[in-house]
Image (tube, rainbow, N blue to C red):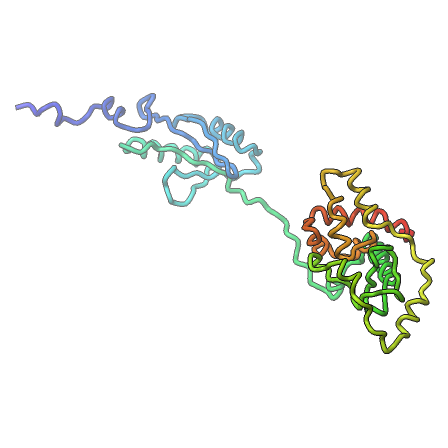
Length: 303
């Protein structure tokens, strides 16, 4: 008796329909070619009977390289084996035979080719230079650093007070240094301006005379006429408020005066992080205030 039709071997046309790769002609399979260049993947579709030169020119176009600059290698997509050289027509013919064999036996997975340039780019790396003692010498200061240091030294020497063993506290009423009539043994704290009460200071009796009055004498020997007339901080705030009203720096005059910051020169001497605490002005407004103070003070010092 004749066997059922379902048990008979499939014909060539039936087998072609079972294979994942299209077979436009008997024994010729269509397949995808992925060209990998750096981190990009571009591709085109080819057939196993395509000429080597056609395949090569299309791959080089995707790699954007000349033939002399590439060493083509290939592997089948999903294959973890090592890539194989693909630099001439003979190697290409072998690759197509392998692909036909895989495609004819495949039942579920499409056979595709992955091609890339295996040429190693020669990069010249400079030899590490041996460290010498000159590398430990810090670089020379810039002109801006030298100018700022000079201005700071001049300001420091002009407002130094032997009575207070440091920078002199300037009376907010007059805005000038008045050593013999000073009623304070030390300057008020800058970091806690809210603890400083100007009314209490004005009512506090004068401290007893110091045992060494020579401090007053040496301080009084400093000629006040030699000091530049630095703008008061109120004038500085009005100048900024006229140009940058959105900063609302005028409202900081009272906190600055309460902290003992009377002249624009004192704004320069205060570190930015300390200045930003006064009146909760913040880093941005403190930086702008110091910059404006520099523009008004440095010309008075001839800088």
